[in-house]
Image: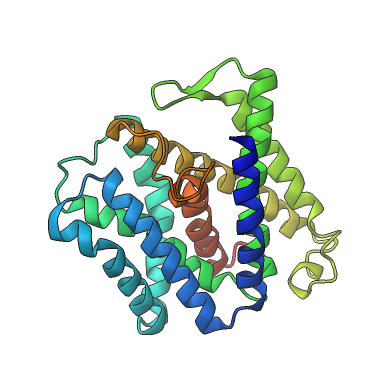
Length: 275
C-alpha cells in the first residue's frame, strides 16, 4: 500500500507542477474544470445521487465553473467567494455539529456539491498568479495535515470528533496550527526574492495578519477534512473513489483545499492577506 501511495504521488507531482507553472491561463482554467468534473463525479456518489442528475452532474459542474470564470462579472465572482467564506466559517461548523445527512436531501445534494467545488476552482484561478502564491497556500494543507498527524500520534489524548474521525485529536490540531503559524513566519525569508513577499519584510502589522490568517486557514482545513469524513461515514464508504491508487479519490486528497482555497481568496479580496 505504501509503495502504491508513493508511486501515485510521484506521478501526480510533476503533472501538478507543470500545470501550475507552465500552463497558459486558458489551459490552467480547463485543468481546473477537469478537477471540478472529477470531484463532482465522486460527489454524486457520496451524496447518493441517481438517475439523469447523477449522469450529467460532473459535466454540468465543470460547465458552470467555466461560465463563472469566463462570463460572470467580477462582483459576482467576488460575492461567490465571500459567500464561501461565510459557508465555511458559519454553516459548516453547524453542519458538523448537527451532523445533517446528505442522503434524501433532494436538491440540496446538488447545490452543496457546487458550494464546495466551484468556489475552490474559482480561487485556483484567482490565486494562481505566477504559480507561487497558489503553491504556498496549497502547502498549508499539506503542512497542517502532516504535523497534525505526527502531533496526534505523539501527544494525542483528547479526541477532536470521535464519532466523525476517531483518529483526530485536539493535540494534533494544536500541532498543525503551530506548524502553519511557523510556516507563515518563515515565508518572508526564503521567498524574499518574490515581489509579493518582499513587501512583508520588517512589517510587524502584516506579519501579525499572516499569523491570524494561519490560524483561520488551519481551522477551515480541519473542517474540510472532518466534513468529508462525516459524509463518507454517513454513506458507509471509506474513500470517495479509487481513482488514485493508494490515496482513494480526488476528494480524499483535496478535502482540506476545498476549504482553504476559497477562504484564502476571500480574505485576499478583502485586502486582509498581503499577497
